[in-house]
Image (tube, rainbow, N blue to C red; front, side):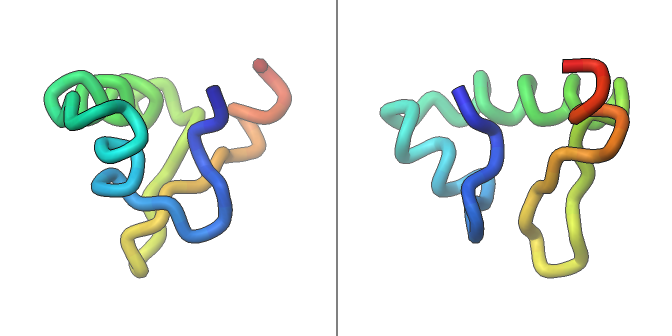
Length: 55
């Protein structure tokens, strides 16, 4: 599964995963904790350099 497609937000990911908001929030939080993703001021999540190289 791709975490980020241009313009994706948590709400978009929730819709794509059939409303599993708790699952998506936990997943995004975990990926943020290990610095694989970060949230831009616009609210978009992007894969970091660490996420790209570790994956």
